[in-house]
Length: 151
Ligand code: IDP
Ligand code: MG
Image 1 (cartoon, helix red, strand yellow):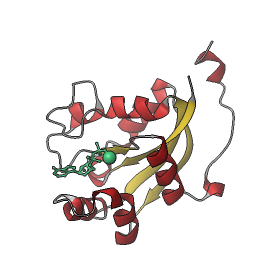
Image 2 (cartoon, helix red, strand yellow):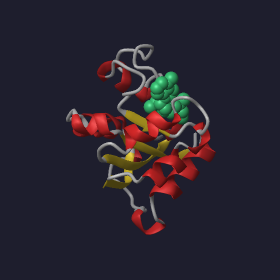
Image 3 (cartoon, protein in one colour):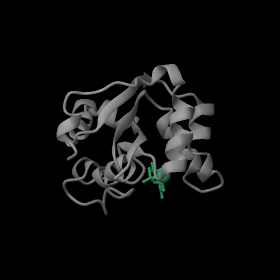
């Protein structure tokens, strides 16, 4: 059982379709703690760094274009096994394969518009949190429900 931080982005389609509250609500109700959050118009440079691992793949440029097309919400969540928890709650990359009950399964139709991003492992989470947030934008604080989320 490890407390982890993970980076989440509500992508432009999630923002444009009015799903910001719905998505944050799901993570919040699960018990994940928001430790950083901001509304961002993503630059080409930031988008290319964020998706740098996919450089050279056919979907790289379309995905950069997608996340720079309209503002996004950038969030750092903290919780027990938060990285996997968020990935499970988002569902598979392609909304057509994502289980009902997941964010992508419930709200998405197409792989190129899959609503939400979440870090895929501890190294990626660290890289992405540092890429999107300055240390002073991240809050260390105790939340009143924490004692009820563990034994
Ligand atoms: P992930 O977001 O579930 O981690 P990745 O394979 O890391 O999935 O891909 C990053 C993003 O690139 C996806 O969320 C999606 O927006 C986009 N993407 C991935 N594969 C495709 C594709 O085959 N067509 C269009 N877009 C894709
Ligand atoms: Mg990924």
